[in-house]
Length: 85
Image 1: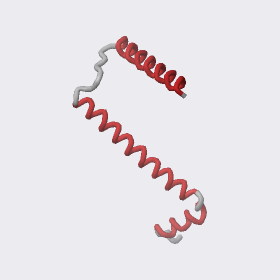
Image 2: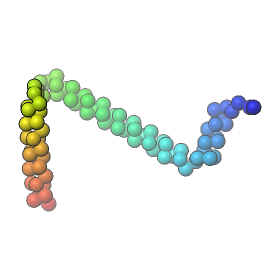
Image 3: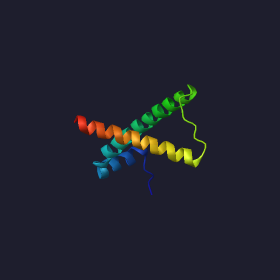
Image 4: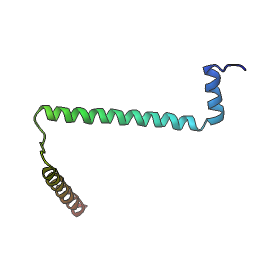
């Protein structure tokens, strides 16, 4: 049996799955964009921590209280945006 070269394999993929190749390329671009966004978000978070801009939560109750506070603040902002719209 003859061994296929990389170009033979690539040609076969394009011939057989031609419509899927652009989808794979699109997916790769989307994945790269997500990774770049995550890197930026991580850098922003680490920079904030380095500046001391963070909240230290030491118990389950503190975490619950913090999440409840954030939930209330977000809900209030959403209501205010709906009123303006």
